[in-house]
Image (spheres, rainbow, N blue to C red):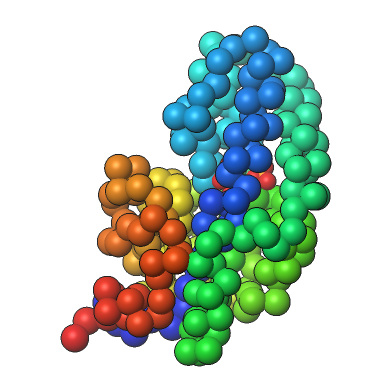
Amino acid sequence: MTEIKACLFDLDGVLVDTAKYHYIAWKELADRLGFEFTEKDNERLKGVSRAASLNILLEIGGLNLDDAEKAKLAESKNNRYVEYISAMDSSEILPGALAFLEDCRSQGIKIALGSASKNAMTILNNTGLTPYFDAIIDGTKTSAAKPDPEVFLLGAEALGIPPVNCVVFEDAEAGIEAASRAGMASVGIGSPETLGAAALVVPSLLEMSVARLKEAFTAV
Ligand code: BG6
Ligand code: MG
């Protein structure tokens, strides 16, 4: 790969520990609807839009509902989720994230957000992360959900950096596929079992530095 000029970050599960709140809020809904929803099931919802997540949840529960009922359920899940994220602060930034963002800044690497969430601004503002970003693309600015590459292509365009010079950081399979379809390299944050399609997988951003990134991706 050529020179790395930009890092594009997913939000939930990469920079902040919100994946647990999504899970709790979906699980509360499944409990109310009367079926079991496990953490393993929840893996399928990571990186997926709210509406698509609800469809997967209902499929797991074997329920077939009309659009009006689905809209109500999605709203009720989101209301619970918003209660959780409204109480967030900087202590819920994931280990290594701040140091790596600082490292990118100091080395002149541009930083963008590429998140499916329509709640991204609430989370960025509550945790104090907003000022780190040169561009923010979230679920309010996209029309197609990951694995569609739109969110990352819009991010690269907003930064003015060609996709080939971008690296995506993702904790979801759908996000790794979106990066690849955008023509970008990716780093999986989590387990190689689910993120094996990424060029590099690390357990957290604690393992990441600009030096390591360049070593892993820049052709010699
Ligand atoms: C993604 C999460 O970042 O955002 C998904 O990984 C979530 O689990 C999606 O469904 C949409 O989030 P929101 O906040 O708009 O419901
Ligand atoms: Mg994520």
